[in-house]
Structure formats: structure tokens, C-alpha cells
Image 1: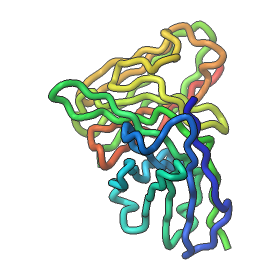
Image 2: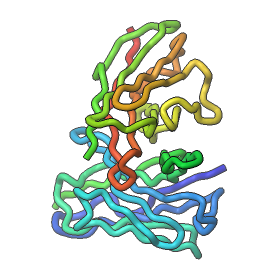
Image 3: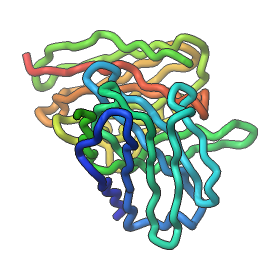
Length: 127
Length: 108
């Protein structure tokens, strides 16, 4: 059974860096069959996709966060991580990691979806 | 970004009711549309992908349809465990994935 688990500090000071790790079990990131995503949720903005990465380290970021986000992968530990710099109170959210699957048919681009999620980690930005 | 608008924001229904939730995209997205269910304190759960394909293990009372800009999620014979928030999500723009604002299904 595929399981994902977020870990990291629950409190980050303004202007500092938010760092989270997602540990994956029941699936191998190095298989190359999936992307691995970070998504956050706030009462105000709802669900917001942050970005995803594949086993080789190829990543794609939400344009609105791209200047502040880094997602990295460690296939030896079967983990991937999120780094968000220069945080403000607006970055206070529940952060989820998720496996990103795709459905494709001949001649069609892949349709991506999030099929397994971590339980979520609340990160509060406050001094 | 492609904006996803859900309606209604919330609805009240009773066990056994048929419920329909609508999601509209700000531009045509073909069938690049997924639906999720979220219960309090939990992560969203994938229900439907590619607009109409039921995820493995999801009860058949859930169905969805649509293409282009207009999509619907239908729950036939609402069950107690179905009271939750439902989200749509587009993947047409694969490097700018976006979600709808959610529809809360409450007990009447």
C-alpha cells in the first residue's frame, strides 16, 4: 500500500525558509512511473499546487511560487523535499505531498491526477 | 492560469438524495478534469480522473461527466459517509495545475 508522510518544522519565522520532507513507502520513486507533488491548503486560497518532480530531478513549479520554491528528490532514501524561501504569513498552510499519476491514450497528452496523499503538515509562519 | 469555478459553494441534502456538483473552467480543458473528496482533517481523496473514469475502489454511486468547460459530479443515493467537501482540478495546463474552490455537501 502506497503511503506518504510529511515531516518538518511546524513553525517558521517570517523571512526564513520552510523545509519539508515527504517519505514514500509502498512505491519506489526511482521506478520513474510517477511525478511527486507538493500541494498546500489554506482557508483563504483553498488548494494550491506548488510543484512536482520526477525520479531524475526534472521539476515543474507553479508560476506564482517559482521564484521561491525548490523541490528535490533523494531516490536513495525514497524521499522528496520542499524548500520555500522568504516566507510570510501568507505561506501558513497545511502542506501535502502527493503521488502524481497520469492517464494517457494514444495521441493525447497525459492527464495528471493526485492518487495518493500524505496526511498533511501544518506549517505556521509567525515570529 | 486556468480558473476553476465550482457551484454551488455548499448544499444541504439528505441520505438517499441525488446530488450534482458543477465545475466550470475558464477555458476549454477537454477532459483534463479530476474530482476529489475531502473530509475534515484529512487529505483529499481521488474519486474521478480524466473527467469520467472512476478511481479504483470508489463506489459506483459516484459518476462524472463533461468536456470542454463544463463538468459535473453526481452522487446517486447520498450516503452518510459522503458528507464532505468536493473539489475539481484541471491538468490541461500540466505546469499550472489548479483546483476549484470546493463544494461542501452538508446534512439537511
